[in-house]
Amino acid sequence: RANWLKKLTQGLSRTGSSIAQVFTGTRIDDELYEELEAALLMADTGVKATEALLLDLKRRVKDAKATEPSQVKALLAEAVTALLKPLEGALVVGEHQPTVIMVVGVNGAGKTTSIGKLTRHLADADQKVLLAAADTFRAAAREQLAVWADRTQVEIISQESGDPSAVTFDAVSAGRARGCDVVIADTAGRLPTQLHLMEELRKIKRVIGKAQPDAPHEVLLVVDGNTGQNALTQVKAFDDALGLTGLIVTKLDGTAKGGVLAAIARERPLPVYFIGVGEKLEDLQMFRASEFAQALLS
Ligand code: GDP
Image 1 (cartoon, rainbow, N blue to C red):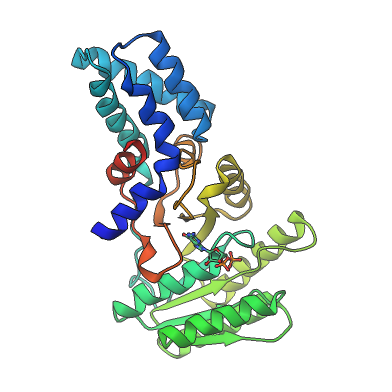
Image 2 (cartoon, rainbow, N blue to C red; image 1 turned 135 degrees about the vertical axis):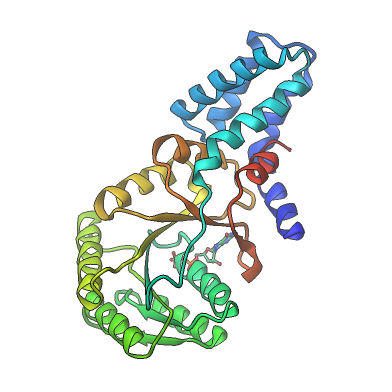
Protein backbone atom coordinates (compact mmCIF):
# COMPACT_ATOMS: atom_id res chain seq x y z
CA ARG A 1 0.00 0.00 0.00
CA ALA A 2 2.93 2.37 0.64
CA ASN A 3 3.95 1.92 -2.97
CA TRP A 4 0.43 2.53 -4.10
CA LEU A 5 0.20 5.74 -2.04
CA LYS A 6 3.32 6.97 -3.76
CA LYS A 7 1.63 6.30 -7.08
CA LEU A 8 -1.52 8.09 -5.98
CA THR A 9 0.50 11.11 -4.86
CA GLN A 10 2.43 11.16 -8.12
CA GLY A 11 -0.76 10.56 -10.06
CA LEU A 12 -2.51 13.50 -8.50
CA SER A 13 0.47 15.84 -8.67
CA ARG A 14 -0.83 17.31 -11.91
CA THR A 15 -4.03 18.22 -10.09
CA GLY A 16 -2.28 19.33 -6.94
CA SER A 17 0.62 21.40 -8.19
CA SER A 18 -1.51 24.42 -9.08
CA ILE A 19 -3.33 24.17 -5.75
CA ALA A 20 -0.09 23.83 -3.78
CA GLN A 21 1.31 26.82 -5.70
CA VAL A 22 -1.32 29.06 -4.06
CA PHE A 23 0.33 28.65 -0.67
CA THR A 24 3.86 29.66 -1.62
CA GLY A 25 3.25 33.36 -0.83
CA THR A 26 3.60 35.09 2.53
CA ARG A 27 0.15 36.55 3.16
CA ILE A 28 -3.34 35.27 3.81
CA ASP A 29 -5.47 37.71 1.83
CA ASP A 30 -8.27 37.90 -0.75
CA GLU A 31 -5.78 37.22 -3.48
CA LEU A 32 -4.85 33.88 -1.92
CA TYR A 33 -8.50 32.83 -1.76
CA GLU A 34 -9.12 33.98 -5.34
CA GLU A 35 -6.14 32.00 -6.59
CA LEU A 36 -7.29 28.99 -4.60
CA GLU A 37 -10.78 29.25 -6.08
CA ALA A 38 -9.33 29.31 -9.59
CA ALA A 39 -7.03 26.36 -8.85
CA LEU A 40 -9.86 24.28 -7.42
CA LEU A 41 -12.07 25.00 -10.43
CA MET A 42 -9.17 24.09 -12.73
CA ALA A 43 -8.92 20.76 -10.88
CA ASP A 44 -12.57 20.05 -11.80
CA THR A 45 -13.82 20.45 -8.26
CA GLY A 46 -16.88 22.20 -9.67
CA VAL A 47 -18.57 25.41 -8.55
CA LYS A 48 -20.62 23.96 -5.69
CA ALA A 49 -17.85 21.96 -4.03
CA THR A 50 -15.40 24.85 -4.50
CA GLU A 51 -17.77 27.27 -2.77
CA ALA A 52 -18.40 24.81 0.05
CA LEU A 53 -14.68 24.18 0.52
CA LEU A 54 -13.78 27.88 0.60
CA LEU A 55 -16.50 28.62 3.13
CA ASP A 56 -15.38 25.76 5.37
CA LEU A 57 -11.72 26.74 4.95
CA LYS A 58 -12.29 30.38 5.94
CA ARG A 59 -14.11 29.23 9.06
CA ARG A 60 -11.23 26.88 9.92
CA VAL A 61 -8.65 29.63 9.31
CA LYS A 62 -10.54 31.98 11.61
CA ASP A 63 -10.97 29.35 14.35
CA ALA A 64 -7.31 28.37 14.21
CA LYS A 65 -6.20 32.02 14.02
CA ALA A 66 -3.85 30.98 11.23
CA THR A 67 -1.27 33.53 10.11
CA GLU A 68 0.81 31.61 7.56
CA PRO A 69 -0.25 30.31 4.14
CA SER A 70 1.29 26.94 5.05
CA GLN A 71 -1.20 26.68 7.93
CA VAL A 72 -4.01 27.42 5.49
CA LYS A 73 -2.79 24.59 3.31
CA ALA A 74 -2.95 22.17 6.24
CA LEU A 75 -6.45 23.41 7.06
CA LEU A 76 -7.47 22.93 3.42
CA ALA A 77 -6.36 19.30 3.69
CA GLU A 78 -8.67 18.98 6.70
CA ALA A 79 -11.55 20.61 4.82
CA VAL A 80 -11.06 18.33 1.79
CA THR A 81 -10.89 15.29 4.07
CA ALA A 82 -14.13 16.29 5.79
CA LEU A 83 -15.85 16.77 2.44
CA LEU A 84 -14.64 13.43 1.06
CA LYS A 85 -15.21 11.39 4.23
CA PRO A 86 -18.79 10.37 3.31
CA LEU A 87 -17.42 8.70 0.16
CA GLU A 88 -15.51 6.08 2.17
CA GLY A 89 -17.18 2.71 2.01
CA ALA A 90 -16.33 -0.97 1.91
CA LEU A 91 -17.83 -3.47 -0.48
CA VAL A 92 -19.49 -6.09 1.69
CA VAL A 93 -19.84 -9.66 0.48
CA GLY A 94 -20.95 -12.76 2.35
CA GLU A 95 -24.40 -11.60 3.42
CA HIS A 96 -26.07 -13.24 0.43
CA GLN A 97 -25.52 -16.49 -1.40
CA PRO A 98 -24.45 -15.31 -3.87
CA THR A 99 -23.88 -11.57 -3.59
CA VAL A 100 -24.75 -10.27 -7.06
CA ILE A 101 -22.77 -7.29 -8.32
CA MET A 102 -23.81 -5.56 -11.53
CA VAL A 103 -21.07 -3.39 -13.03
CA VAL A 104 -21.90 -0.57 -15.43
CA GLY A 105 -20.02 2.25 -17.16
CA VAL A 106 -19.21 3.71 -20.55
CA ASN A 107 -16.70 1.93 -22.79
CA GLY A 108 -13.11 2.66 -21.93
CA ALA A 109 -13.80 3.68 -18.32
CA GLY A 110 -11.90 0.64 -17.08
CA LYS A 111 -14.86 -1.61 -16.33
CA THR A 112 -13.41 -4.93 -17.45
CA THR A 113 -10.01 -4.21 -15.92
CA SER A 114 -11.63 -3.23 -12.62
CA ILE A 115 -13.76 -6.39 -12.62
CA GLY A 116 -10.59 -8.41 -13.15
CA LYS A 117 -8.86 -6.73 -10.24
CA LEU A 118 -11.92 -7.04 -8.02
CA THR A 119 -12.20 -10.72 -8.91
CA ARG A 120 -8.61 -11.27 -7.84
CA HIS A 121 -9.22 -9.48 -4.52
CA LEU A 122 -12.26 -11.67 -3.85
CA ALA A 123 -10.65 -14.90 -5.01
CA ASP A 124 -7.66 -14.15 -2.77
CA ALA A 125 -10.12 -13.82 0.11
CA ASP A 126 -11.37 -17.36 -0.67
CA GLN A 127 -14.61 -16.20 -2.24
CA LYS A 128 -16.01 -18.38 -5.01
CA VAL A 129 -16.62 -15.97 -7.87
CA LEU A 130 -18.56 -16.41 -11.10
CA LEU A 131 -18.35 -13.87 -13.92
CA ALA A 132 -21.17 -13.05 -16.32
CA ALA A 133 -20.13 -11.63 -19.69
CA ALA A 134 -23.26 -9.61 -20.38
CA ASP A 135 -21.60 -7.26 -22.84
CA THR A 136 -22.79 -9.32 -25.80
CA PHE A 137 -22.24 -6.40 -28.20
CA ARG A 138 -18.47 -6.43 -28.20
CA ALA A 139 -16.61 -9.68 -28.79
CA ALA A 140 -13.46 -8.02 -27.45
CA ALA A 141 -15.14 -7.33 -24.12
CA ARG A 142 -16.11 -10.99 -23.76
CA GLU A 143 -12.64 -12.14 -24.68
CA GLN A 144 -11.01 -9.73 -22.26
CA LEU A 145 -13.23 -10.92 -19.44
CA ALA A 146 -12.46 -14.54 -20.33
CA VAL A 147 -8.73 -13.75 -20.02
CA TRP A 148 -9.34 -12.38 -16.51
CA ALA A 149 -11.43 -15.44 -15.60
CA ASP A 150 -8.59 -17.65 -16.75
CA ARG A 151 -5.98 -15.63 -14.89
CA THR A 152 -7.94 -15.65 -11.65
CA GLN A 153 -9.17 -19.24 -12.10
CA VAL A 154 -12.86 -18.43 -11.77
CA GLU A 155 -15.83 -19.61 -13.80
CA ILE A 156 -17.42 -17.50 -16.49
CA ILE A 157 -20.79 -17.62 -18.23
CA SER A 158 -20.52 -16.20 -21.72
CA GLN A 159 -22.51 -16.40 -24.94
CA GLU A 160 -21.41 -15.43 -28.38
CA SER A 161 -24.49 -13.46 -29.16
CA GLY A 162 -27.96 -13.00 -27.85
CA ASP A 163 -29.71 -11.20 -25.10
CA PRO A 164 -27.47 -9.76 -22.37
CA SER A 165 -30.22 -10.16 -19.79
CA ALA A 166 -30.55 -13.86 -20.69
CA VAL A 167 -26.81 -14.35 -20.13
CA THR A 168 -27.07 -12.59 -16.80
CA PHE A 169 -30.10 -14.65 -15.76
CA ASP A 170 -28.22 -17.85 -16.60
CA ALA A 171 -25.18 -16.67 -14.68
CA VAL A 172 -27.07 -15.76 -11.52
CA SER A 173 -28.98 -19.05 -11.66
CA ALA A 174 -25.72 -20.95 -12.16
CA GLY A 175 -24.14 -18.98 -9.30
CA ARG A 176 -26.95 -20.07 -6.98
CA ALA A 177 -26.86 -23.68 -8.15
CA ARG A 178 -23.07 -23.93 -7.82
CA GLY A 179 -22.91 -22.34 -4.38
CA CYS A 180 -20.94 -19.30 -5.49
CA ASP A 181 -20.27 -16.45 -3.07
CA VAL A 182 -20.21 -13.65 -5.63
CA VAL A 183 -21.56 -13.21 -9.15
CA ILE A 184 -20.18 -10.21 -11.06
CA ALA A 185 -21.98 -9.13 -14.24
CA ASP A 186 -20.04 -7.09 -16.79
CA THR A 187 -22.39 -5.04 -18.98
CA ALA A 188 -22.19 -3.14 -22.25
CA GLY A 189 -20.96 0.44 -22.25
CA ARG A 190 -22.24 1.62 -25.56
CA LEU A 191 -25.41 1.07 -27.56
CA PRO A 192 -26.77 3.09 -30.50
CA THR A 193 -28.19 5.69 -28.16
CA GLN A 194 -27.76 6.52 -24.50
CA LEU A 195 -31.47 5.88 -24.03
CA HIS A 196 -31.10 2.34 -25.35
CA LEU A 197 -28.20 1.71 -23.01
CA MET A 198 -30.12 2.70 -19.89
CA GLU A 199 -33.14 0.65 -21.01
CA GLU A 200 -30.94 -2.39 -21.58
CA LEU A 201 -29.27 -1.99 -18.19
CA ARG A 202 -32.61 -1.55 -16.44
CA LYS A 203 -33.76 -4.77 -18.07
CA ILE A 204 -30.65 -6.62 -16.90
CA LYS A 205 -31.25 -5.33 -13.37
CA ARG A 206 -34.87 -6.53 -13.43
CA VAL A 207 -33.89 -9.94 -14.76
CA ILE A 208 -31.25 -10.37 -12.05
CA GLY A 209 -34.08 -9.83 -9.54
CA LYS A 210 -36.01 -12.64 -11.20
CA ALA A 211 -33.10 -15.06 -10.90
CA GLN A 212 -32.58 -14.08 -7.25
CA PRO A 213 -35.31 -12.08 -5.50
CA ASP A 214 -33.20 -9.62 -3.47
CA ALA A 215 -30.54 -9.07 -6.16
CA PRO A 216 -28.61 -7.21 -7.47
CA HIS A 217 -27.06 -6.30 -4.14
CA GLU A 218 -24.67 -3.85 -5.70
CA VAL A 219 -24.90 -1.74 -8.84
CA LEU A 220 -21.43 -0.28 -9.33
CA LEU A 221 -20.50 2.44 -11.80
CA VAL A 222 -16.94 2.54 -13.09
CA VAL A 223 -15.94 6.08 -14.08
CA ASP A 224 -12.74 7.45 -15.57
CA GLY A 225 -11.52 10.07 -13.07
CA ASN A 226 -9.48 11.69 -15.79
CA THR A 227 -12.69 12.93 -17.44
CA GLY A 228 -13.33 15.33 -14.56
CA GLN A 229 -16.76 16.96 -14.52
CA ASN A 230 -17.88 14.49 -17.19
CA ALA A 231 -17.47 11.75 -14.58
CA LEU A 232 -19.93 13.58 -12.34
CA THR A 233 -22.39 13.82 -15.24
CA GLN A 234 -22.13 10.05 -15.72
CA VAL A 235 -22.60 9.37 -12.01
CA LYS A 236 -25.83 11.38 -12.04
CA ALA A 237 -27.16 9.82 -15.27
CA PHE A 238 -26.49 6.21 -14.24
CA ASP A 239 -27.73 6.81 -10.69
CA ASP A 240 -30.96 8.38 -11.94
CA ALA A 241 -31.55 5.47 -14.32
CA LEU A 242 -30.46 2.53 -12.17
CA GLY A 243 -30.00 3.52 -8.55
CA LEU A 244 -26.28 3.04 -7.98
CA THR A 245 -24.89 1.59 -4.75
CA GLY A 246 -21.26 2.54 -5.30
CA LEU A 247 -18.48 3.78 -7.54
CA ILE A 248 -15.08 2.73 -8.79
CA VAL A 249 -13.04 5.72 -9.95
CA THR A 250 -10.18 4.78 -12.29
CA LYS A 251 -7.23 6.52 -13.93
CA LEU A 252 -6.31 8.84 -11.10
CA ASP A 253 -2.72 8.39 -12.23
CA GLY A 254 -1.52 11.45 -14.11
CA THR A 255 -4.79 13.35 -14.00
CA ALA A 256 -5.22 17.11 -13.67
CA LYS A 257 -8.86 16.60 -12.72
CA GLY A 258 -8.68 14.73 -9.42
CA GLY A 259 -10.88 17.40 -7.81
CA VAL A 260 -13.89 15.68 -9.33
CA LEU A 261 -14.15 13.48 -6.23
CA ALA A 262 -14.98 16.62 -4.24
CA ALA A 263 -17.66 17.45 -6.80
CA ILE A 264 -19.09 13.92 -6.47
CA ALA A 265 -19.00 14.24 -2.67
CA ARG A 266 -20.92 17.51 -2.84
CA GLU A 267 -23.46 16.58 -5.49
CA ARG A 268 -23.95 12.80 -5.50
CA PRO A 269 -22.20 11.24 -2.50
CA LEU A 270 -22.09 7.53 -3.32
CA PRO A 271 -19.54 5.25 -1.68
CA VAL A 272 -16.31 5.00 -3.63
CA TYR A 273 -15.35 1.39 -3.06
CA PHE A 274 -12.11 1.52 -5.01
CA ILE A 275 -9.88 3.96 -6.85
CA GLY A 276 -7.46 2.99 -9.60
CA VAL A 277 -4.05 4.46 -10.30
CA GLY A 278 -2.85 2.15 -13.05
CA GLU A 279 -3.36 -1.01 -15.03
CA LYS A 280 -1.76 -3.49 -12.65
CA LEU A 281 -3.60 -5.69 -10.21
CA GLU A 282 -2.35 -3.87 -7.13
CA ASP A 283 -3.29 -0.49 -8.62
CA LEU A 284 -6.89 -0.75 -7.43
CA GLN A 285 -7.23 0.06 -3.73
CA MET A 286 -9.77 1.22 -1.19
CA PHE A 287 -10.52 4.91 -1.03
CA ARG A 288 -9.47 6.81 2.09
CA ALA A 289 -10.46 10.49 2.32
CA SER A 290 -7.42 11.68 4.30
CA GLU A 291 -4.95 9.84 2.04
CA PHE A 292 -6.61 11.31 -1.01
CA ALA A 293 -6.61 14.85 0.44
CA GLN A 294 -2.93 14.57 1.36
CA ALA A 295 -2.05 13.25 -2.09
CA LEU A 296 -4.07 15.98 -3.74
CA LEU A 297 -2.25 18.80 -1.95
CA SER A 298 1.32 17.52 -2.04
P1 GDP B 1 -13.96 -0.95 -20.39
O1 GDP B 1 -14.21 -0.63 -21.83
O2 GDP B 1 -14.69 0.00 -19.48
O3 GDP B 1 -14.17 -2.37 -20.02
O4 GDP B 1 -12.43 -0.56 -20.13
P2 GDP B 1 -11.15 -1.49 -20.00
O5 GDP B 1 -11.18 -2.23 -18.73
O6 GDP B 1 -10.97 -2.25 -21.25
O7 GDP B 1 -10.02 -0.35 -19.85
C1 GDP B 1 -9.74 0.58 -20.85
C2 GDP B 1 -8.27 0.95 -20.77
O8 GDP B 1 -8.00 1.68 -19.56
C3 GDP B 1 -7.35 -0.25 -20.74
O9 GDP B 1 -6.22 0.03 -21.54
C4 GDP B 1 -6.97 -0.37 -19.25
O10 GDP B 1 -5.71 -0.98 -19.08
C5 GDP B 1 -6.93 1.08 -18.85
N1 GDP B 1 -7.13 1.30 -17.40
C6 GDP B 1 -8.08 0.77 -16.59
N2 GDP B 1 -7.95 1.27 -15.32
C7 GDP B 1 -6.90 2.12 -15.34
C8 GDP B 1 -6.26 2.96 -14.35
O11 GDP B 1 -6.62 3.05 -13.16
N3 GDP B 1 -5.18 3.71 -14.80
C9 GDP B 1 -4.74 3.67 -16.08
N4 GDP B 1 -3.70 4.42 -16.44
N5 GDP B 1 -5.31 2.89 -17.01
C10 GDP B 1 -6.37 2.13 -16.66
